[in-house]
Length: 96
Image (cartoon, rainbow, N blue to C red):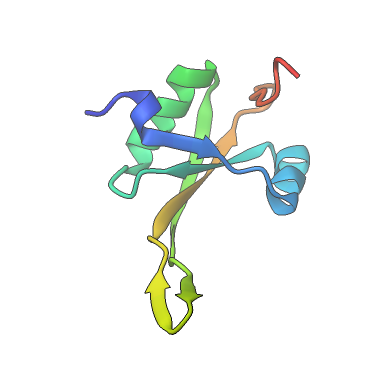
């Protein structure tokens, strides 16, 4: 099994994820494409010392990009929405 730091690539901070965090105690992360829901839950619990109740994952299609007449594609990636138990929080901006 991979280490927790290898599974969680980075937290996603968008308007939608901020609303989910405030209303439903759900946090959004970008994870490696080969990670399973159990691995994601274990990694979040280990990194942030919280209790995970649910993990939802989705594969995000890479966007088409164009440079002159050449058309390329950004790589596809995987997103995980993690629901924490009541009272648990994750502080992304501790040092700010």
